[in-house]
Length: 111
Image (cartoon, rainbow, N blue to C red; front, side, top):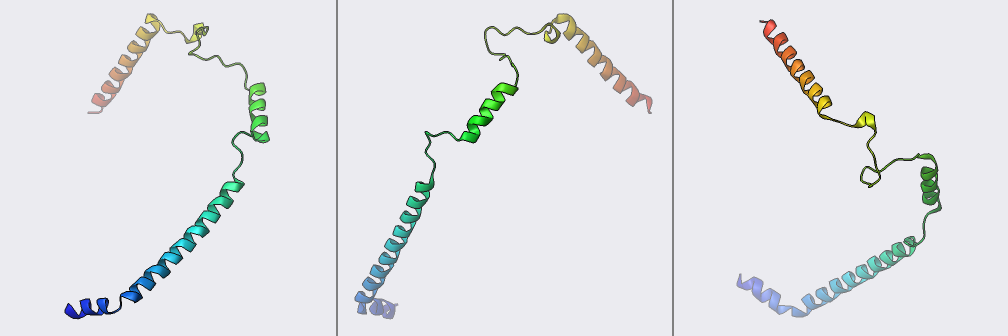
């Protein structure tokens, strides 16, 4: 252990040069990365400009989609065919109970 300590203390200048050269390499790599980042950012489109294809697609959708009412709008009225009332729900419950009874009967009938 003492030999290792003595060897590292014998050549402190060598470590400093190594540190400086690695620092220079890191600095050069940092410059390369910054240049690459600037180049990529220069190709980035302007966020304020709209793409003509997007504008055309939106226009086409508005013209061809039809008139869909938003269910959250205040003037939306549920069509009569889609309205649910107590009678419809009662019929659904009775049908479901019958389906459960039918499944149980079939299962028990096997044995």
